[in-house]
Image 1 (cartoon, rainbow, N blue to C red):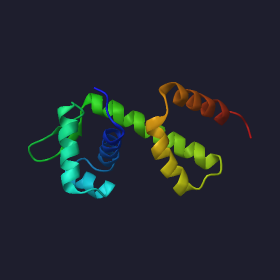
Image 2 (cartoon, helix red, strand yellow):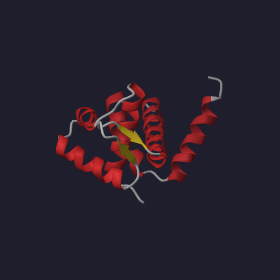
Image 3 (cartoon, rainbow, N blue to C red):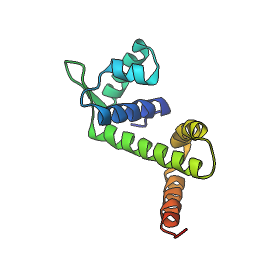
Image 4 (cartoon, rainbow, N blue to C red):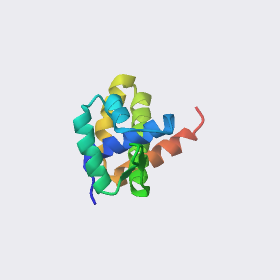
Length: 126
């Protein structure tokens, strides 16, 4: 199932929150993203039906294997693109904002090329 940009953002947020604490609920996602609880509830239902998350009876959200793969992919893109933009002289605030847009639009091929380029140049002595 193809996931939309908003779904990727929710999965990335859940992933980040799960790194900070062991128990994540819809209200935590709503607070972190600044969205209304009804919007988050609807999104969680779609993600659950799509097989990306599981929701326990107590409301705890966990990522499925598929959901975790998507979340990790988007998070890696976000962090690497942010770092690249900052290295190029972009302010941190703008880099974070632009990376959030780019992470969903860039192809796997282009991202892998950027990643390879960065890794090759990190090894060069300054």
